[in-house]
Length: 54
Figure 1 (cartoon, rainbow, N blue to C red):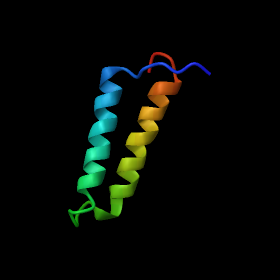
Figure 2: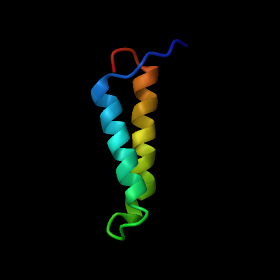
Figure 3: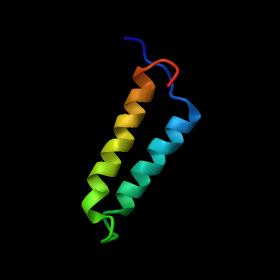
């Protein structure tokens, strides 16, 4: 399996989701979703590496 670097927008969206997920640990309004936001960011970044042109 050949890995490719993700496009810039995929990286930025994944990083933003991960940061919001980390902040969600300390903000009660986002606390219930913090794990899922960080997981979605990781999943998006993994898809960007695995899929060509994504």
